[in-house]
Length: 322
Image (cartoon, rainbow, N blue to C red):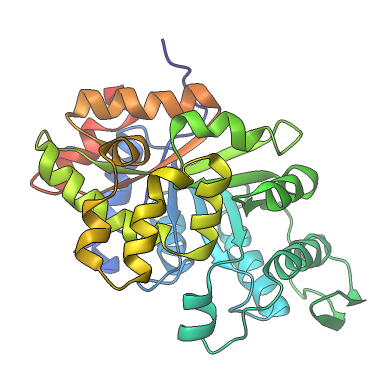
């Protein structure tokens, strides 16, 4: 019997559906028992606008962002943005902060990607002070803020989560954040990762789900997802730390050599099956439960609805179907 999490989320916005058309989807998510909607900030919608719409349209839903980069907004603007959403949805907003990646920060936003651990740590500490209403006049290691105070005080403090992969950031999450955000790991990896946090905290994890009985197609889709993410240096280092290096080394070698076709081919099926949830709805629900049993308190499903109706997938993977 799987533990029932106190919160159960899904990733928004849905691909192929305009933001303006999400109102009914938010209502249905709440009707199906989803407690949370979690956005991201990569190359689609920004992280805050979909959550602002959800806050206005469906007050039953908690809101989370996993993640907003520490680099792409100035410290004061980031605090203002968080405070605004916390005011719109008091007690329902969780802010997820992360280092992001060189591609997003440097290549897309023209901002130097320097000292990612220190920058994320300093931003988290600044936000703690600023959101509490304090005047911040302080020199951090990676930036300096002189005389900033929020003009609209935050009455209900939002939870601040930290995206973490390896020991340093995981220990920082355990020591200074309200929760940790995990990504691209297997259910069996969760215990290893949480062992570094050093304390009991909330654990949000984005779980990629391809609900189809067509195993070959699911694995083909998953292989493209794996190569897109796990060739990023931070994720490669994460999986080496987890002990998955020998299984992924052929993929990394082929990718570095420019042989994209071979990079896809040499990813072992076991790696795909561990990292990507796929199969029938029942099989997917069982796999999700393994993450929950391992310590994930806020699963945030990212559904890839290949060959199935999105509305059906959302319903069949919801808490009401568990």
